[in-house]
Length: 270
Ligand code: NAD
Image (tube, rainbow, N blue to C red; front, side):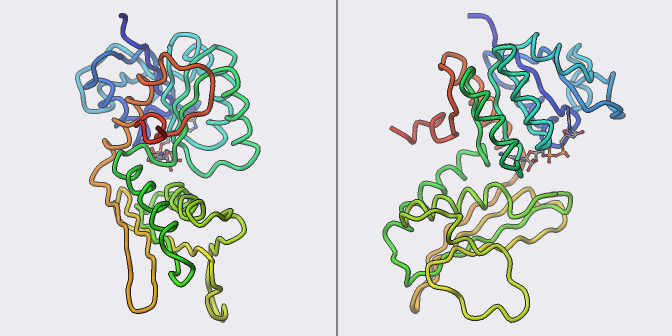
């Protein structure tokens, strides 16, 4: 079977470069095209050289429409507005879309869901295998422990991260809420400052730390009477997300239109 043709949007970004390395290492796929936003200093550069590899003969352009027309699957870790636009390009061109961009507003998320009616879309707040195991454990733990155990999600990321809490922290919150049989929207406590009053029973709290070059750390605390259960994931490098995204694209190659998660890709959903 021919290799899956991959397009990388946001090619000069931290994840874009990790994706280029991951596609080059993987069997069954190859980079066919790459984009960056208009005016970016990396336009015209070879994506292999940008990512610290040998040149791959694929220049970075800002021609999004041509990229979607030329490839089988697009890997998108960019920015919310760009990702919503990429959803439209994917459905117009019948292209698989694998997207990890976080911080999408409701209307931007709606654009992704619309695309998923005509093409296979894999969307995950975190593409690492370990975090997806943590998500399953958090849901299960929240199911087993009652509201005597206060749930707090603490995350820390590098100083350049623009959204908070992280998409993964929110994913962990959703998993905990699901385990408790409630909706996260009704129990989330996303910011404390000043005289907040005592903690409300049943809420799920979030705290975000930013600094240095930390790729991503997440800790879900179940703080009960005289004991505490904690589920922690520490990312050692961006390659864990990039490898997961490539795996998702290969998995999606023969899937019908739909919105899939990393749990689907890993077979955690049965
Ligand atoms: P980054 O800022 O280093 O890279 C984003 C790149 O996208 C930039 O180079 C930017 O110029 C480019 N871009 C923006 N608009 C574009 C457009 N219209 N067309 C083409 N390129 C465009 O950020 P990053 O650290 O690589 O993270 C990117 C996104 O991925 C963030 O939302 C981050 O939270 C998310 N992320 C998700 C996971 C996951 O597993 N789901 C893991 C890491 C990061």
